[in-house]
Image (cartoon, rainbow over all chains, first blue to last red; front, top):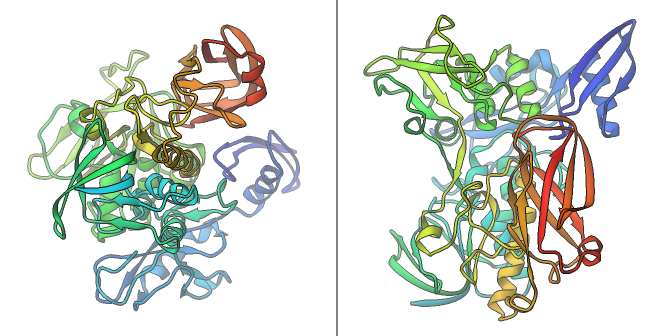
Length: 125
Length: 422
């Protein structure tokens, strides 16, 4: 049996969770203000994930496109996913939610646009 | 001179929410002025997630959060004039603005909503010795360069100050291929949200040097290195603790200051604690008909709170523009709101208890880090409300809601205080 303290990132409360681990599995979570805390502690101690937000290039523009992974991806994959996103060049027009990279790094998660880019220069609302 | 019912200065989250709320309250002559070419304010460059958990029960990025309000704004037929700089506001609500498209313009408004946001403290405010080489930026300025303009400010980065923007930029610069050597914080605790310390520093192995500061800047044309030293309890650098970081970029995340040049010139009284206007529960400043909301009023850490606050400001401005704003004002005794021990920057500063619809929201920052603490609300010294917190930190604003029943039960009270006890 071992104990670990993790900081919940589910909301700005930032609850300090005391997690008891038995045989690599979470047996107890203490200190969570809501149900999300226990779920987060289980995830964070067994298979940590993060939603990644970064930039992709837009064809013919210096101004980049902001993107995010549609779901969280394994924490260990962040840098390789960002590298794959940096490799693409998106053609306008782009709408919020448009898929920019499908199944990034084989995670099964898509990368989607989080801003609009109009076809005509300087039109982003 | 153009007559408008409500003139809103600033098209960020505060101005947008205020405009939408004013329209929904029935005001059909609302004009919003924005100095950037697009609406959305600072959210446009905040490409990270964490916005909207309270308002939309969704985790959105800044541009997505802004877009929802921009869409709603346009769907309601509201009008904004971008690329327009407001130059002055008078106490009788005449606003002068200038833009390439329309030149100099004058507006006369029945109500004005100040929603200009805040700006960053710069190197000059820190008085760090050394030359003035290129490569030293406020973190938000660097955020704009990277996320909106597509420029990288440098490759080897030290961040001074652990405010949220600095933490977010530590991750951002790392993901864009820069090496972030350390985040240096003068105080013994982080100035930013816990989740940002976890997700922006810990995740990437970036050290957070608490009780440290930058004591010297090296390099003449371009930044070459910074000296970092530990500080004592009085925040004085400790000789012998200096370490040198070779870097080409120093980002400063050392605080935000509400942008109140226009407000002051309009005769609006400004708080020395929040650096924003003194307001009542209607978010009306000391000048009748001039309202304030968002980061120009006090620096928020959650845009959701800005939205809620600015919605109220827009609603109240609409009421005032209809000529119903002062009702109840002179008649009822104003409750004075004062910071108690452990509390800084309560907003609002005065309250008309009779006018409060169903609850009075109070916002403040804890003066230090408190664990297992309680925020205690007192009316004329008598405890009327107590709320427990596992942890309170200056980096996380507290929002307390006092139910109307509590105010009614103590009708006639003259002073409300909030204090933090452990």
